[in-house]
Amino acid sequence: MADIQTADELIRELYRHRKVINHLFKRKTASFDELTELADGKEKEILQAKARGMISLQEGEPARLEERLLNFVEDFLEINEDIRNYEVDESIRILKKNIYLYEIDEDSRERERYLHRIKRYLMSIGRVIRKNAGTLNNLVKQEYKTASSIELKRIKIEDHNEQAEKLLELIKNAEELLENAFFRVVPDEGLRLIVNDLKGTHLTMARHNLIALRQEIVRFINQIAELDRQHKKIIQLKKLRDLYELEVRTNVEEVFAHENALFFDTQLRFQTHLDLEYLRGDDGLDIIERVATRRQHKIRMQLQAELDIDGDLLDPQQQTMLHVDFSKLKRAFFLQNEDLLSFVKSYDFGEKMEEDQIIKIYCQVALIFEDEMDFGLAENPFDTAKQIEENGKQFAFIRPKKQEKN
Amino acid sequence: MNIDHTSTRRVFELLSRGQFLSANAIKPDIRKLYDQVDEYFTAFESVYAPLGFHLKKGNNYYYFSREGGRQTIEEKIERFYRYIDRLSFFATFAPGFGEGMRFYVKDIVHKCNVETDLNDQLQRLSSDKSTSTHDKVRDLVEEMRRQGFMDCEDDENEGFIVLSSYNYLKDIVDLIDIDPTNE
Image (cartoon, rainbow over all chains, first blue to last red):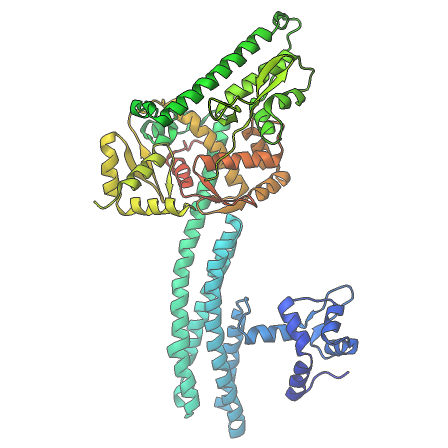
């Protein structure tokens, strides 16, 4: 099938495949089947789009928009993220050439053509420079915030710095070009307007933006250097600390001689005395009763633990050092639904446990974490506390205290 | 002096525990406290000074300092050692780790699983050998949260943010001069 030859054909083909083009522009890639669906099942349409250079369809690859078409749409919508400074470079070169041709060619029709091209490229320069400056601005801010490492930040920002420099240079070149006598001599009103626009608005604004951007880049680069320096220092201090050389190789003692932040003061709990008036009131009485009942339980449990532990355990040959991680035990207890005694009995300590060891651990957990435990105490003096009976002995029915939602 | 005493009390409760007021605190009421202290610094300062508490200003944070604390220099340095370890761990996870950074516990876990240095540091930070990497990281982050250096933004996904108070640790690092002799 023939390539597209005229603008008219191009517009028709674009319109014909507009659904597919739009889909691929938004999604970047798609499968052949997806596209066929868009074309109401007509596979031939998709193949036609490929043949006309709209889309690329390669074996084993998803379908994409053809490079030229993609560039055109991005360009037109001004969303291309690439800073294409070389375009400006090239445009300036073409401008110079056309000015020269205009000067030496005497044919008025040719001169008309050159003039036309000159205007076109002047406008293009203005547009591209302005767009590039804006894109650079956005990119710098965005990449500084999102780059995932100090190194990446530095690389990207330095790259943009170079681009900004280059762009400023191009602006200077363009302005120099506009000083060419050609622009004063040619009696074309349209040309004059374009030149004034370019000089007065586009180039000036772009230059201001770029200078501000360069300053911001310098700030960012300094910040990055600072982050890097801090990072290296932390690693160094860590190394010194691991080698126990921190006090010797640094002034850390002097620093902490003067550092009095409460943060380093670990004795910080303020204990205030009980308000006697409060204790004499009803609320106070309740609390006293509860604490008293609990103390009775505690003492009972302690006695039991002491009474039941056999002298055998003191025999050094039989005695095994059982290391119990009480925090871990408590965490596991909180995660299940049994009461404390049942839980401890069924817990796997890694070795066979005697009954008295179980009871001892039950008591210890209850005491160590007594603030977090609910001892099943009676709500009022007429109820009895919750208890379990085992081998004729009574044990408190202990569950984790219910957390209050704040 | 137009600060009300609820604020002075609340600020005292927080700072007297050795904690910090961070500019980027998540809870709005803490943010408000920070803003108040920021605006009426001298007023707040003069309330606490007679009690022996000096209100100090840092880079986006406030804290108390007090003369005659019972800690010896050695004890303070010991305590700081632990924080060097933690600073180093988080800095290894993400160079430039600091105020305002957001992260998920699972991202740290993932990095520990692929970077031996990071994992080594984690193992040495945790005393309990039997817990999983995820638990170790979570415990570590929780500890930083309890100390007031981080806060939880996303409970479900374990997403955290580093508070401005983290700058305090970095500021101390800045104060320390390393002897430039090269060995």
